[in-house]
Length: 334
Ligand code: AHM
Ligand code: MG
Image: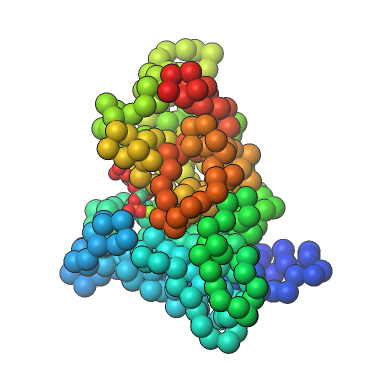
């Protein structure tokens, strides 16, 4: 079986001008993912040490779990160690973080990440994930790293991916040439290529949304949910409802089986819950690379120009025909 490390090197050799920096950067992410995976697997055993709440809040006022903080520190350290990244922005940090070693300062990449997504699921042994997104910096390498380096639209992404810590741990990524998935073999300590060139079915039978918030949803979303529940033999409705409450896991399942994930605006959360830079853009890049689609109900997610690091956006992602259909309801009723 081809390992992730071998696959990345093989892909790099197809680009004669590649310098190897991106290859090395992806290796840092792979290594950090293994460490986080090990700690997640132990979370139940030593829950008082690494499970549970950390007793402080992150930039959005949410209680940080200990593993959130641990994962953030591990990914940050792994990315700083090799010097291919000049700075990172993370859901768990108030502001972007600049790496100031000589090699880091001269590097041309920034990484944006949600180090541990779905962390409310840690203590109950449900799948969680890491999401990452890589951009070439806008400012000159060697000069100061600026906020503008991080506030880039998703179409500028060089690479993106996620790790899902599930019944198996998988790392799935794209560098703009399809989406490739690797499954971790704990006995070997390596990720093996298991899902090359993943394609999202154009039409699926699964819809994923937190229906507990139904009364707060925009009219277009309410109507779309009813559409999913109505009987229609031609389109195989009613669809199945599946919601884990871990974005990475819900996205991963829908990508393999076909489906739509929606986190819409609500009356108390006008832009929904999910963050454009750490969650929506990377998964939008993966969705599009796999033949799917991601919007805010109206606009293509990856064309939104961010104005702040922790910006939120309504999110519709998954099978292209389902996202288009939901968009029709949004345009008609909202
Ligand atoms: P987090 O980054 O604080 O973990 O929040 C993001 C998570 C997603 O993984 C998940 O899809 C969503 O929040 C669930 O939210 P809700 O409980 O409101 O349905
Ligand atoms: Mg998150």
